[in-house]
Length: 98
View 1: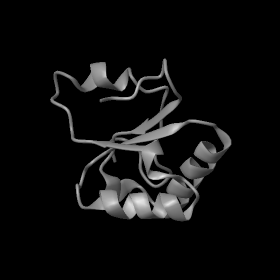
View 2: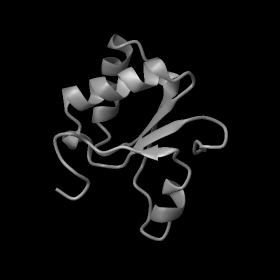
View 3: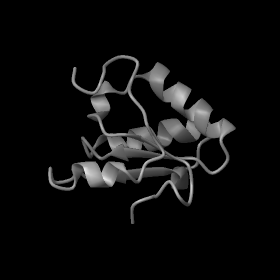
């Protein structure tokens, strides 16, 4: 059930969601609003943040079907899975290894 860059624009970030600050999320939703059909793919990490992120996106005009949350992948699948994204995003507040 993974998205794929061949069928839509898939913006992805695989950081822990606590690294995602309001300014970064607002920027990402602005990109999505300007890019018809773009989807945002995030890790369900932590699982409890999914509802908050979905509500925040809706308040910024992004419908929930444009969001995709997945669980962490096994290390052996990590790089293969990332190839499905069109563009890997990083947060303004942290980088991927901070």
